[in-house]
Image 1 (cartoon, rainbow, N blue to C red):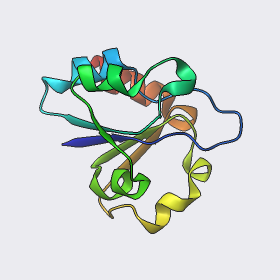
Image 2: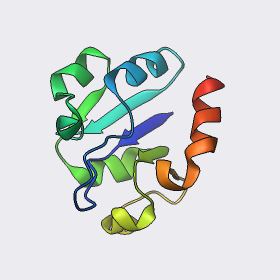
Image 3: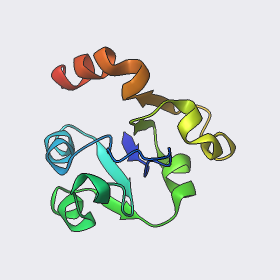
Length: 110
């Protein structure tokens, strides 16, 4: 299963949906993580840190939306409006702003 982490585009948003440490903990559980180039920069996480945690860095934003089975982002659906044009029909979209407690249960259950 592929988890995609896009760069947040909402004005003044500086957070990222997964840290490199979270990526590393998910990697051994049959998940592959793809991260948009620069997604963690404003949170202090370089692309190299994500690579060392077994994430694949992609430069094409559309690729995140097309490949992901689960799309994790900080802000809700309106924060990345362009994804509607590219996202796979079966992709599950989860954001902290609307699914904070569900995401916590998801992470604890892994």
